[in-house]
Image 1 (cartoon, rainbow, N blue to C red):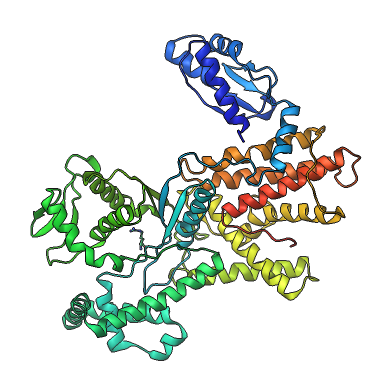
Image 2 (cartoon, helix red, strand yellow):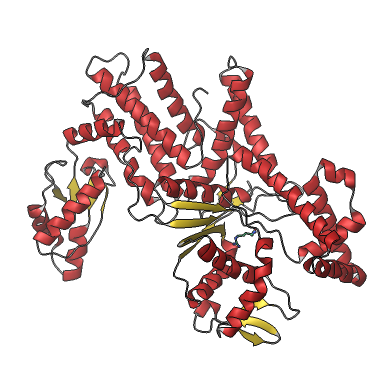
Length: 568
Ligand code: ARG
Protein backbone atom coordinates (compact mmCIF):
# COMPACT_ATOMS: atom_id res chain seq x y z
CA UNK A 1 0.00 0.00 0.00
CA UNK A 2 1.53 3.26 -1.09
CA UNK A 3 1.74 6.00 1.54
CA UNK A 4 0.48 9.53 0.94
CA UNK A 5 4.04 10.75 1.11
CA UNK A 6 5.29 8.40 -1.58
CA UNK A 7 2.24 9.10 -3.76
CA UNK A 8 3.02 12.81 -3.53
CA UNK A 9 6.69 12.16 -4.26
CA UNK A 10 5.79 10.19 -7.35
CA UNK A 11 3.36 12.85 -8.54
CA UNK A 12 5.90 15.58 -7.89
CA UNK A 13 8.53 13.81 -10.01
CA UNK A 14 6.04 13.47 -12.83
CA UNK A 15 5.18 17.17 -12.61
CA UNK A 16 8.85 18.18 -12.61
CA UNK A 17 9.44 16.09 -15.68
CA UNK A 18 6.42 17.56 -17.45
CA UNK A 19 7.58 21.08 -16.58
CA UNK A 20 11.05 20.30 -17.89
CA UNK A 21 12.62 20.80 -14.48
CA UNK A 22 15.27 18.68 -12.75
CA UNK A 23 14.19 16.23 -10.07
CA UNK A 24 14.90 17.97 -6.79
CA UNK A 25 13.66 18.55 -3.29
CA UNK A 26 11.74 16.44 -0.83
CA UNK A 27 8.15 15.87 0.13
CA UNK A 28 7.96 16.02 3.90
CA UNK A 29 5.30 16.25 6.56
CA UNK A 30 4.39 19.92 6.92
CA UNK A 31 6.11 21.58 9.83
CA UNK A 32 2.99 23.56 10.71
CA UNK A 33 -0.37 21.81 10.20
CA UNK A 34 -2.08 25.16 9.57
CA UNK A 35 -0.41 25.20 6.18
CA UNK A 36 -1.37 21.67 5.21
CA UNK A 37 -0.26 18.10 5.73
CA UNK A 38 2.75 17.77 3.44
CA UNK A 39 5.03 20.21 1.71
CA UNK A 40 7.82 20.24 -0.82
CA UNK A 41 10.80 22.56 -1.12
CA UNK A 42 11.44 21.50 -4.75
CA UNK A 43 10.81 25.00 -6.14
CA UNK A 44 13.24 26.54 -3.66
CA UNK A 45 15.99 24.08 -4.52
CA UNK A 46 15.55 24.48 -8.29
CA UNK A 47 15.25 28.28 -8.12
CA UNK A 48 18.45 28.45 -6.14
CA UNK A 49 20.32 26.26 -8.64
CA UNK A 50 19.16 28.34 -11.59
CA UNK A 51 18.96 31.79 -10.05
CA UNK A 52 15.24 32.06 -10.65
CA UNK A 53 12.30 33.32 -8.63
CA UNK A 54 11.15 30.45 -6.39
CA UNK A 55 7.46 31.39 -6.43
CA UNK A 56 7.50 31.45 -10.23
CA UNK A 57 9.12 28.00 -10.29
CA UNK A 58 6.53 26.80 -7.79
CA UNK A 59 3.75 27.98 -10.08
CA UNK A 60 5.28 26.14 -13.02
CA UNK A 61 5.36 22.98 -10.94
CA UNK A 62 1.81 23.25 -9.57
CA UNK A 63 0.46 23.78 -13.07
CA UNK A 64 1.68 20.25 -13.92
CA UNK A 65 0.83 18.63 -10.59
CA UNK A 66 -2.01 16.17 -10.71
CA UNK A 67 -2.81 15.30 -7.12
CA UNK A 68 -6.58 15.74 -7.18
CA UNK A 69 -7.29 12.14 -6.10
CA UNK A 70 -5.71 12.67 -2.69
CA UNK A 71 -5.10 16.39 -2.15
CA UNK A 72 -6.89 19.71 -2.32
CA UNK A 73 -5.32 21.99 -4.96
CA UNK A 74 -1.68 22.57 -3.91
CA UNK A 75 -0.87 26.05 -2.64
CA UNK A 76 2.32 28.03 -3.06
CA UNK A 77 3.21 29.57 0.26
CA UNK A 78 5.81 31.88 1.77
CA UNK A 79 9.12 31.92 -0.05
CA UNK A 80 8.07 29.17 -2.44
CA UNK A 81 7.00 26.05 -0.59
CA UNK A 82 4.24 24.01 -2.17
CA UNK A 83 1.73 22.79 0.40
CA UNK A 84 -0.64 19.85 0.18
CA UNK A 85 -3.76 19.29 2.26
CA UNK A 86 -5.14 15.76 2.09
CA UNK A 87 -8.75 15.34 1.04
CA UNK A 88 -10.95 14.00 3.75
CA UNK A 89 -12.30 11.27 1.47
CA UNK A 90 -8.75 10.09 0.71
CA UNK A 91 -8.00 9.82 4.42
CA UNK A 92 -11.23 7.92 5.07
CA UNK A 93 -10.43 5.49 2.29
CA UNK A 94 -6.89 4.93 3.57
CA UNK A 95 -8.14 4.29 7.11
CA UNK A 96 -10.58 1.68 5.79
CA UNK A 97 -7.67 -0.01 3.98
CA UNK A 98 -5.38 0.11 7.01
CA UNK A 99 -8.06 -1.49 9.15
CA UNK A 100 -7.75 -4.71 7.20
CA UNK A 101 -3.98 -4.58 6.71
CA UNK A 102 -1.92 -6.77 9.03
CA UNK A 103 1.14 -4.56 8.37
CA UNK A 104 -0.60 -1.25 9.02
CA UNK A 105 0.48 0.02 5.63
CA UNK A 106 4.18 -0.69 6.05
CA UNK A 107 5.51 -2.17 2.82
CA UNK A 108 8.24 -4.76 2.71
CA UNK A 109 11.51 -3.65 1.19
CA UNK A 110 11.90 -4.60 -2.48
CA UNK A 111 15.54 -5.66 -2.18
CA UNK A 112 16.04 -7.31 1.19
CA UNK A 113 19.53 -7.48 2.61
CA UNK A 114 21.20 -10.11 4.74
CA UNK A 115 22.28 -8.09 7.74
CA UNK A 116 24.51 -9.18 10.61
CA UNK A 117 23.81 -6.95 13.59
CA UNK A 118 26.51 -7.00 16.26
CA UNK A 119 25.16 -5.34 19.37
CA UNK A 120 25.39 -5.57 23.16
CA UNK A 121 28.52 -7.72 23.02
CA UNK A 122 29.57 -7.50 26.70
CA UNK A 123 32.86 -8.71 28.12
CA UNK A 124 33.34 -11.88 30.15
CA UNK A 125 34.34 -11.70 33.83
CA UNK A 126 32.97 -8.19 34.09
CA UNK A 127 29.50 -7.22 35.25
CA UNK A 128 27.12 -5.76 32.70
CA UNK A 129 26.56 -2.18 33.76
CA UNK A 130 23.92 0.42 33.07
CA UNK A 131 25.82 1.70 30.02
CA UNK A 132 25.18 -1.63 28.27
CA UNK A 133 21.52 -0.69 27.98
CA UNK A 134 22.32 1.62 25.10
CA UNK A 135 23.96 -0.65 22.56
CA UNK A 136 21.78 -3.60 23.59
CA UNK A 137 18.43 -1.85 23.33
CA UNK A 138 19.38 0.14 20.22
CA UNK A 139 20.68 -2.91 18.36
CA UNK A 140 17.60 -4.91 19.31
CA UNK A 141 15.22 -2.18 18.08
CA UNK A 142 17.11 -1.88 14.79
CA UNK A 143 16.97 -5.65 14.37
CA UNK A 144 13.22 -5.72 14.97
CA UNK A 145 12.60 -2.89 12.53
CA UNK A 146 14.88 -4.31 9.83
CA UNK A 147 13.18 -7.68 10.16
CA UNK A 148 9.71 -6.15 9.97
CA UNK A 149 10.74 -4.34 6.78
CA UNK A 150 11.65 -7.71 5.27
CA UNK A 151 15.42 -7.87 5.71
CA UNK A 152 17.07 -11.07 6.79
CA UNK A 153 18.63 -10.36 10.15
CA UNK A 154 21.29 -12.29 12.07
CA UNK A 155 21.68 -10.99 15.63
CA UNK A 156 25.21 -11.73 16.80
CA UNK A 157 26.46 -11.33 20.35
CA UNK A 158 30.19 -10.75 19.87
CA UNK A 159 31.12 -11.22 23.50
CA UNK A 160 34.60 -10.31 24.73
CA UNK A 161 35.68 -13.76 25.87
CA UNK A 162 39.35 -13.77 24.91
CA UNK A 163 42.36 -11.56 25.51
CA UNK A 164 45.27 -10.81 27.79
CA UNK A 165 43.06 -10.23 30.85
CA UNK A 166 42.58 -14.00 31.13
CA UNK A 167 46.16 -14.41 32.35
CA UNK A 168 45.18 -12.42 35.44
CA UNK A 169 41.82 -14.11 35.82
CA UNK A 170 43.40 -17.57 35.73
CA UNK A 171 46.18 -16.65 38.14
CA UNK A 172 43.58 -15.17 40.46
CA UNK A 173 41.40 -18.26 40.13
CA UNK A 174 44.30 -20.52 41.12
CA UNK A 175 45.58 -18.36 43.98
CA UNK A 176 42.79 -16.19 45.36
CA UNK A 177 39.45 -17.80 44.59
CA UNK A 178 36.78 -17.98 47.31
CA UNK A 179 34.58 -20.86 46.13
CA UNK A 180 31.67 -19.91 48.33
CA UNK A 181 31.65 -16.34 47.05
CA UNK A 182 31.83 -17.72 43.52
CA UNK A 183 28.64 -19.70 44.08
CA UNK A 184 26.88 -16.76 45.70
CA UNK A 185 27.91 -13.98 43.32
CA UNK A 186 30.01 -15.38 40.50
CA UNK A 187 30.70 -12.19 38.57
CA UNK A 188 31.51 -10.16 41.67
CA UNK A 189 34.01 -12.84 42.67
CA UNK A 190 35.57 -12.94 39.20
CA UNK A 191 35.92 -9.18 39.25
CA UNK A 192 37.45 -9.33 42.72
CA UNK A 193 40.13 -11.88 41.78
CA UNK A 194 40.90 -10.02 38.59
CA UNK A 195 41.29 -6.69 40.36
CA UNK A 196 43.36 -8.11 43.16
CA UNK A 197 45.67 -9.95 40.78
CA UNK A 198 46.06 -6.79 38.79
CA UNK A 199 47.01 -4.81 41.88
CA UNK A 200 49.53 -7.44 42.95
CA UNK A 201 50.96 -7.62 39.46
CA UNK A 202 51.51 -3.88 39.48
CA UNK A 203 53.60 -4.18 42.61
CA UNK A 204 55.23 -7.56 42.14
CA UNK A 205 57.18 -8.65 39.07
CA UNK A 206 56.75 -12.31 40.06
CA UNK A 207 52.96 -12.10 39.92
CA UNK A 208 53.17 -10.27 36.64
CA UNK A 209 55.33 -13.01 35.13
CA UNK A 210 53.17 -15.75 36.58
CA UNK A 211 49.97 -14.25 35.11
CA UNK A 212 51.69 -13.94 31.75
CA UNK A 213 52.73 -17.58 31.96
CA UNK A 214 49.10 -18.58 32.65
CA UNK A 215 48.05 -16.69 29.54
CA UNK A 216 50.66 -18.42 27.39
CA UNK A 217 49.51 -21.79 28.75
CA UNK A 218 45.89 -20.95 27.94
CA UNK A 219 46.83 -19.97 24.42
CA UNK A 220 48.80 -23.19 24.02
CA UNK A 221 45.68 -25.16 24.94
CA UNK A 222 46.63 -26.30 28.45
CA UNK A 223 43.62 -28.35 29.65
CA UNK A 224 43.49 -26.94 33.19
CA UNK A 225 43.65 -23.33 32.09
CA UNK A 226 41.23 -23.97 29.29
CA UNK A 227 38.74 -25.41 31.75
CA UNK A 228 39.08 -22.40 34.06
CA UNK A 229 38.57 -20.07 31.13
CA UNK A 230 35.51 -22.07 30.05
CA UNK A 231 34.03 -21.82 33.53
CA UNK A 232 34.42 -18.06 33.65
CA UNK A 233 32.79 -17.77 30.23
CA UNK A 234 29.88 -19.99 31.27
CA UNK A 235 29.30 -18.10 34.51
CA UNK A 236 29.31 -14.80 32.68
CA UNK A 237 26.94 -16.03 30.03
CA UNK A 238 24.51 -17.14 32.71
CA UNK A 239 24.55 -13.64 34.11
CA UNK A 240 24.06 -12.09 30.66
CA UNK A 241 21.14 -14.42 30.08
CA UNK A 242 19.38 -13.14 33.19
CA UNK A 243 19.57 -9.60 31.84
CA UNK A 244 18.48 -10.68 28.35
CA UNK A 245 15.49 -12.57 29.75
CA UNK A 246 14.31 -9.47 31.62
CA UNK A 247 14.97 -7.26 28.60
CA UNK A 248 13.39 -9.70 26.12
CA UNK A 249 16.55 -9.67 24.00
CA UNK A 250 17.33 -12.66 21.81
CA UNK A 251 20.39 -13.46 19.74
CA UNK A 252 20.56 -15.78 16.76
CA UNK A 253 24.24 -16.54 17.31
CA UNK A 254 26.91 -15.81 19.92
CA UNK A 255 30.30 -15.76 18.27
CA UNK A 256 32.62 -14.32 20.86
CA UNK A 257 36.19 -13.24 20.26
CA UNK A 258 37.47 -16.71 21.19
CA UNK A 259 35.61 -18.18 18.22
CA UNK A 260 38.04 -16.39 15.91
CA UNK A 261 41.18 -17.33 17.76
CA UNK A 262 42.25 -20.12 15.38
CA UNK A 263 41.82 -17.90 12.38
CA UNK A 264 44.12 -15.09 13.47
CA UNK A 265 47.50 -16.37 12.19
CA UNK A 266 45.95 -16.85 8.77
CA UNK A 267 44.60 -13.27 8.75
CA UNK A 268 48.05 -11.87 9.40
CA UNK A 269 49.69 -14.10 6.77
CA UNK A 270 47.13 -13.11 4.21
CA UNK A 271 47.51 -9.39 4.80
CA UNK A 272 51.30 -9.68 4.72
CA UNK A 273 51.23 -11.69 1.50
CA UNK A 274 48.75 -9.34 -0.11
CA UNK A 275 51.00 -6.41 0.69
CA UNK A 276 48.34 -4.77 2.84
CA UNK A 277 50.38 -5.16 6.01
CA UNK A 278 54.05 -4.61 6.72
CA UNK A 279 56.49 -5.26 9.53
CA UNK A 280 57.32 -2.19 11.54
CA UNK A 281 59.53 -2.26 14.63
CA UNK A 282 58.90 -5.98 14.98
CA UNK A 283 55.10 -5.70 14.86
CA UNK A 284 52.85 -6.36 11.88
CA UNK A 285 50.95 -3.20 10.99
CA UNK A 286 48.54 -1.81 8.45
CA UNK A 287 49.19 1.85 7.61
CA UNK A 288 46.65 4.41 6.46
CA UNK A 289 49.03 7.05 5.21
CA UNK A 290 46.54 8.71 2.89
CA UNK A 291 43.73 9.04 5.43
CA UNK A 292 44.16 12.25 7.44
CA UNK A 293 42.75 11.14 10.80
CA UNK A 294 44.41 7.71 10.61
CA UNK A 295 47.73 8.91 9.25
CA UNK A 296 49.63 8.39 12.50
CA UNK A 297 47.53 5.51 13.71
CA UNK A 298 48.62 2.28 12.06
CA UNK A 299 46.57 -0.74 13.05
CA UNK A 300 48.70 -3.35 14.78
CA UNK A 301 47.56 -6.82 13.82
CA UNK A 302 50.39 -8.80 15.42
CA UNK A 303 52.25 -7.43 18.37
CA UNK A 304 55.99 -7.57 18.73
CA UNK A 305 55.64 -10.50 21.15
CA UNK A 306 53.70 -12.44 18.49
CA UNK A 307 50.29 -11.94 20.17
CA UNK A 308 47.15 -10.97 18.28
CA UNK A 309 44.65 -8.36 19.39
CA UNK A 310 41.17 -6.89 19.08
CA UNK A 311 41.92 -5.60 15.58
CA UNK A 312 43.10 -8.98 14.28
CA UNK A 313 40.02 -10.57 15.74
CA UNK A 314 37.68 -8.07 14.10
CA UNK A 315 39.31 -8.61 10.70
CA UNK A 316 38.65 -12.33 11.08
CA UNK A 317 35.11 -11.48 12.11
CA UNK A 318 34.51 -9.59 8.86
CA UNK A 319 35.68 -12.65 6.87
CA UNK A 320 33.41 -14.98 8.78
CA UNK A 321 30.34 -12.79 8.48
CA UNK A 322 30.71 -12.32 4.76
CA UNK A 323 32.06 -15.70 3.68
CA UNK A 324 30.41 -18.05 6.16
CA UNK A 325 27.23 -16.20 7.04
CA UNK A 326 26.74 -14.73 3.59
CA UNK A 327 26.10 -11.21 4.89
CA UNK A 328 26.00 -8.28 2.48
CA UNK A 329 25.46 -5.77 5.27
CA UNK A 330 27.13 -5.48 8.67
CA UNK A 331 25.95 -3.17 11.44
CA UNK A 332 28.03 -2.87 14.58
CA UNK A 333 26.54 -1.05 17.52
CA UNK A 334 28.95 0.21 20.21
CA UNK A 335 29.88 3.30 22.16
CA UNK A 336 31.51 6.18 20.33
CA UNK A 337 35.08 5.48 21.60
CA UNK A 338 35.42 2.60 19.14
CA UNK A 339 34.93 4.85 16.10
CA UNK A 340 38.56 4.85 14.96
CA UNK A 341 38.87 1.13 15.51
CA UNK A 342 35.99 0.38 13.14
CA UNK A 343 37.06 2.98 10.65
CA UNK A 344 40.30 1.00 10.38
CA UNK A 345 38.54 -2.36 10.24
CA UNK A 346 36.23 -1.21 7.44
CA UNK A 347 39.11 0.36 5.54
CA UNK A 348 41.10 -2.89 5.72
CA UNK A 349 38.03 -4.84 4.56
CA UNK A 350 37.64 -2.44 1.64
CA UNK A 351 41.30 -2.89 0.68
CA UNK A 352 40.85 -6.64 0.84
CA UNK A 353 38.12 -6.22 -1.75
CA UNK A 354 35.01 -6.76 0.37
CA UNK A 355 32.03 -4.92 -1.04
CA UNK A 356 29.61 -5.32 1.87
CA UNK A 357 27.86 -2.32 3.36
CA UNK A 358 29.62 -1.72 6.69
CA UNK A 359 28.09 0.58 9.29
CA UNK A 360 29.38 1.47 12.70
CA UNK A 361 26.41 2.70 14.70
CA UNK A 362 27.56 4.58 17.76
CA UNK A 363 25.82 5.61 20.93
CA UNK A 364 26.45 8.15 23.67
CA UNK A 365 26.55 7.78 27.44
CA UNK A 366 24.13 7.52 30.32
CA UNK A 367 24.77 10.21 32.89
CA UNK A 368 24.02 10.53 36.59
CA UNK A 369 22.24 13.52 38.15
CA UNK A 370 25.64 15.27 38.31
CA UNK A 371 25.84 15.07 34.49
CA UNK A 372 28.92 12.85 34.71
CA UNK A 373 29.03 9.17 33.69
CA UNK A 374 26.50 7.36 35.86
CA UNK A 375 28.24 5.67 38.84
CA UNK A 376 27.30 4.25 42.22
CA UNK A 377 27.99 6.31 45.33
CA UNK A 378 31.31 4.54 45.76
CA UNK A 379 32.27 5.40 42.18
CA UNK A 380 31.68 1.99 40.60
CA UNK A 381 29.75 1.23 37.44
CA UNK A 382 26.07 0.68 38.20
CA UNK A 383 25.26 -3.04 37.65
CA UNK A 384 22.68 -3.51 34.93
CA UNK A 385 20.69 -6.15 36.82
CA UNK A 386 20.24 -3.79 39.78
CA UNK A 387 18.82 -1.15 37.46
CA UNK A 388 16.42 -3.61 35.82
CA UNK A 389 15.23 -4.88 39.21
CA UNK A 390 14.70 -1.38 40.55
CA UNK A 391 12.72 -0.25 37.49
CA UNK A 392 10.39 -3.22 37.91
CA UNK A 393 10.09 -2.68 41.65
CA UNK A 394 9.20 0.98 41.25
CA UNK A 395 6.64 0.19 38.58
CA UNK A 396 5.18 -2.40 40.95
CA UNK A 397 4.75 0.20 43.67
CA UNK A 398 3.01 2.58 41.28
CA UNK A 399 0.57 -0.15 40.16
CA UNK A 400 -0.09 -1.09 43.77
CA UNK A 401 -1.21 2.48 44.42
CA UNK A 402 -3.14 3.02 41.23
CA UNK A 403 -4.84 -0.32 40.84
CA UNK A 404 -4.67 -2.29 44.12
CA UNK A 405 -7.41 -4.73 43.08
CA UNK A 406 -5.41 -6.41 40.34
CA UNK A 407 -4.31 -9.95 41.12
CA UNK A 408 -0.83 -10.65 42.37
CA UNK A 409 0.30 -12.21 39.10
CA UNK A 410 -1.26 -9.45 37.00
CA UNK A 411 0.66 -6.87 39.04
CA UNK A 412 3.92 -8.72 38.46
CA UNK A 413 3.39 -9.05 34.74
CA UNK A 414 2.39 -5.41 34.34
CA UNK A 415 5.24 -4.17 36.54
CA UNK A 416 7.72 -5.90 34.27
CA UNK A 417 6.14 -4.51 31.12
CA UNK A 418 6.08 -0.98 32.51
CA UNK A 419 9.44 -0.97 34.29
CA UNK A 420 11.43 -2.45 31.41
CA UNK A 421 9.43 -0.47 28.86
CA UNK A 422 10.23 2.76 30.70
CA UNK A 423 13.96 2.03 30.70
CA UNK A 424 14.05 1.13 27.02
CA UNK A 425 11.92 4.04 25.95
CA UNK A 426 13.95 6.58 27.94
CA UNK A 427 16.92 5.41 25.91
CA UNK A 428 15.36 4.99 22.48
CA UNK A 429 13.44 8.27 22.55
CA UNK A 430 16.76 10.14 22.63
CA UNK A 431 18.96 10.53 19.59
CA UNK A 432 21.44 7.69 19.99
CA UNK A 433 24.48 10.00 20.23
CA UNK A 434 22.94 12.29 22.85
CA UNK A 435 24.12 11.72 26.41
CA UNK A 436 21.13 11.67 28.74
CA UNK A 437 20.61 11.95 32.47
CA UNK A 438 19.17 8.79 33.96
CA UNK A 439 16.08 9.37 36.10
CA UNK A 440 13.68 6.69 37.31
CA UNK A 441 11.13 9.35 38.25
CA UNK A 442 11.08 10.87 34.83
CA UNK A 443 11.07 7.64 32.81
CA UNK A 444 8.29 6.09 34.93
CA UNK A 445 6.08 9.17 34.89
CA UNK A 446 2.63 8.91 33.32
CA UNK A 447 3.09 12.42 31.95
CA UNK A 448 5.36 13.43 29.11
CA UNK A 449 7.26 11.52 26.47
CA UNK A 450 7.55 8.23 28.38
CA UNK A 451 6.66 4.59 27.84
CA UNK A 452 4.02 4.60 30.61
CA UNK A 453 2.28 7.53 28.91
CA UNK A 454 2.11 5.58 25.63
CA UNK A 455 1.15 2.35 27.37
CA UNK A 456 -1.58 4.24 29.19
CA UNK A 457 -3.01 5.52 25.90
CA UNK A 458 -3.06 1.92 24.69
CA UNK A 459 -4.75 0.73 27.89
CA UNK A 460 -7.40 3.42 27.52
CA UNK A 461 -8.13 2.20 24.00
CA UNK A 462 -8.34 -1.39 25.15
CA UNK A 463 -10.80 -0.38 27.83
CA UNK A 464 -13.01 1.33 25.22
CA UNK A 465 -12.89 -1.85 23.15
CA UNK A 466 -13.92 -3.97 26.15
CA UNK A 467 -16.79 -1.64 26.99
CA UNK A 468 -18.03 -1.79 23.41
CA UNK A 469 -19.80 -4.98 24.38
CA UNK A 470 -19.10 -6.96 21.22
CA UNK A 471 -16.22 -8.23 19.14
CA UNK A 472 -14.65 -5.46 17.04
CA UNK A 473 -15.01 -5.87 13.30
CA UNK A 474 -13.75 -3.20 10.91
CA UNK A 475 -16.45 -1.24 9.03
CA UNK A 476 -16.19 -1.24 5.23
CA UNK A 477 -16.32 2.55 5.09
CA UNK A 478 -15.20 5.17 7.55
CA UNK A 479 -16.73 8.64 8.06
CA UNK A 480 -14.66 11.35 9.68
CA UNK A 481 -16.14 14.76 10.48
CA UNK A 482 -14.49 16.44 13.48
CA UNK A 483 -11.08 18.12 13.09
CA UNK A 484 -9.65 16.11 16.01
CA UNK A 485 -10.60 12.78 14.43
CA UNK A 486 -9.31 13.79 11.00
CA UNK A 487 -6.07 14.92 12.58
CA UNK A 488 -5.71 11.58 14.41
CA UNK A 489 -6.50 9.65 11.23
CA UNK A 490 -3.80 11.52 9.29
CA UNK A 491 -1.32 10.74 12.05
CA UNK A 492 -2.19 7.04 11.89
CA UNK A 493 -1.54 7.07 8.13
CA UNK A 494 2.00 8.35 8.75
CA UNK A 495 3.11 5.18 10.57
CA UNK A 496 4.09 3.53 7.28
CA UNK A 497 6.14 6.60 6.34
CA UNK A 498 7.99 6.72 9.64
CA UNK A 499 9.09 3.10 10.13
CA UNK A 500 11.45 2.87 7.10
CA UNK A 501 12.91 6.28 7.93
CA UNK A 502 14.36 4.91 11.16
CA UNK A 503 16.98 2.97 9.23
CA UNK A 504 18.25 5.95 7.22
CA UNK A 505 20.46 7.05 10.06
CA UNK A 506 19.57 4.40 12.64
CA UNK A 507 17.29 6.60 14.71
CA UNK A 508 14.60 4.74 16.61
CA UNK A 509 13.91 8.08 18.31
CA UNK A 510 12.03 9.09 15.14
CA UNK A 511 9.60 6.26 15.75
CA UNK A 512 9.41 6.98 19.48
CA UNK A 513 8.57 10.61 18.88
CA UNK A 514 6.00 9.69 16.27
CA UNK A 515 4.28 7.38 18.78
CA UNK A 516 4.29 10.18 21.34
CA UNK A 517 2.60 12.52 18.87
CA UNK A 518 0.14 9.79 17.98
CA UNK A 519 -0.78 9.32 21.65
CA UNK A 520 -1.19 13.10 21.98
CA UNK A 521 -3.48 13.15 18.95
CA UNK A 522 -5.46 10.33 20.46
CA UNK A 523 -5.92 12.21 23.73
CA UNK A 524 -7.12 15.33 21.87
CA UNK A 525 -9.51 13.19 19.85
CA UNK A 526 -10.79 11.46 22.97
CA UNK A 527 -11.46 14.78 24.68
CA UNK A 528 -13.20 16.30 21.67
CA UNK A 529 -15.18 13.34 20.37
CA UNK A 530 -17.46 10.94 22.23
CA UNK A 531 -16.85 7.38 21.02
CA UNK A 532 -19.22 4.85 22.59
CA UNK A 533 -21.92 7.47 23.08
CA UNK A 534 -21.70 8.85 19.51
CA UNK A 535 -24.46 8.33 16.93
CA UNK A 536 -23.90 6.09 13.91
CA UNK A 537 -22.08 6.23 11.57
CA UNK A 538 -19.65 8.19 13.78
CA UNK A 539 -19.72 5.55 16.48
CA UNK A 540 -18.41 2.77 14.26
CA UNK A 541 -15.88 5.03 12.60
CA UNK A 542 -14.52 6.31 15.90
CA UNK A 543 -14.34 2.83 17.34
CA UNK A 544 -12.46 1.77 14.23
CA UNK A 545 -10.10 4.73 14.47
CA UNK A 546 -9.49 4.01 18.15
CA UNK A 547 -8.84 0.37 17.43
CA UNK A 548 -6.41 1.23 14.65
CA UNK A 549 -4.59 3.74 16.86
CA UNK A 550 -4.20 1.00 19.48
CA UNK A 551 -2.76 -1.37 16.91
CA UNK A 552 -0.26 1.22 15.72
CA UNK A 553 0.80 1.99 19.29
CA UNK A 554 1.20 -1.70 20.03
CA UNK A 555 3.12 -2.45 16.84
CA UNK A 556 5.27 0.67 17.10
CA UNK A 557 6.25 -0.06 20.68
CA UNK A 558 6.92 -3.70 19.80
CA UNK A 559 9.33 -2.54 17.10
CA UNK A 560 11.17 -0.71 19.87
CA UNK A 561 11.17 -3.90 21.95
CA UNK A 562 8.49 -2.59 24.33
CA UNK A 563 5.37 -4.48 25.36
CA UNK A 564 1.92 -3.13 26.16
CA UNK A 565 -0.30 -4.25 29.05
CA UNK A 566 -4.08 -4.72 28.79
CA UNK A 567 -4.55 -2.86 32.07
CA UNK A 568 -2.33 -0.78 34.31
N1 ARG B 1 33.13 -6.38 23.66
C1 ARG B 1 33.28 -5.06 23.12
C2 ARG B 1 33.13 -4.02 24.22
O1 ARG B 1 32.56 -4.30 25.26
C3 ARG B 1 32.28 -4.73 22.04
C4 ARG B 1 32.38 -5.61 20.83
C5 ARG B 1 31.83 -4.96 19.61
N2 ARG B 1 31.92 -5.79 18.45
C6 ARG B 1 33.04 -6.09 17.76
N3 ARG B 1 32.93 -6.80 16.68
N4 ARG B 1 34.21 -5.66 18.14
O2 ARG B 1 33.57 -2.91 24.05
